Image 1 (cartoon, rainbow, N blue to C red):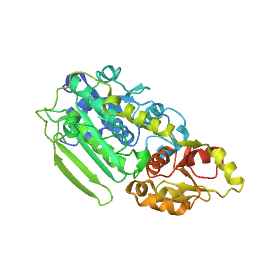
Image 2 (cartoon, rainbow, N blue to C red):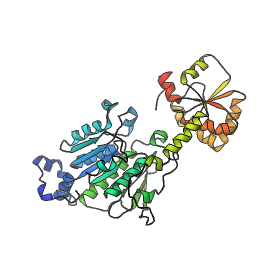
Image 3 (cartoon, one colour):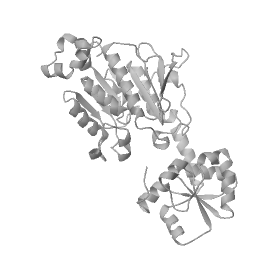
Image 4 (tube, rainbow, N blue to C red):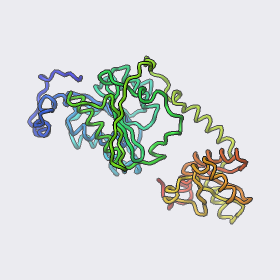
Length: 390
């Protein structure tokens, strides 16, 4: 309801005091604050982006906030997901977020959707809200949210983050472009690593999430110039902002229905290929590896294919580092040939996926090997708890 009947909205004495710093800003004033109180915003995800976004929307006085998430709080979240606290580890993120929101603003209505958003439920979940804010971190959900917003004619406030870089814009607003104008086709699965794989500066989602919150408030109050038609690029490492122009593509196919977005992004095909490759590679458990090491056997070489900075965090004793990118470039293949020197190859990574990929490359080069199932994570959980998990 971006054009509410403002005469029906009356602030209480407590609200006049709470929002006093808004009320004395001419561009917001009493009318703008009433618009915020009448507005409804759906936030998809309560992670790095959703955390600052929800905190500031609640503090600003947005009257009704919906939250979609199905995950629980993990200790590794706390480096960047500032809406959650240590006492909430292992508990649902949406409950943690609601609790924190009500500490900030008990007058805010919070509706929770403890579910994975899908083509089956997206339209029903999005329909009651004025604005949708995308705080997700995967391509299938981003395309789904975009298409649902187009079908329901709702603004989609977008943000994404990776390592030191972030981007933000507003899709599907005032005849502006949507996500498919920026990314007509998804990248191949695995080409763009997630934050769990590539890492992220914990402060970065705070910046991008606050930008998303700012754009949301501007849309609600009707003030300022939004990022619609502009993609804002932020580089935290060099502290620079750049801007790219976005325009609707007149040749883009019309969005008429929600589809299977996992299929569209090639996820099932990639999983099948990975499973096929996995089936062709011999595996051993971390317990079997420990027994082999304890036996004093010296006929094998344990190769760690993670990145050097991961190797610094935790390592299995006696392992030798040959990063997957080196193996992919070919240089690592020659290095492994040299360090094997007639010995058998056993490879591991964090959880087993990258080492399986490395072994597939090495197999085509004539080098057979065994993959450690579960990688160093399983080693920490089942063999040596003193090895840090990350």
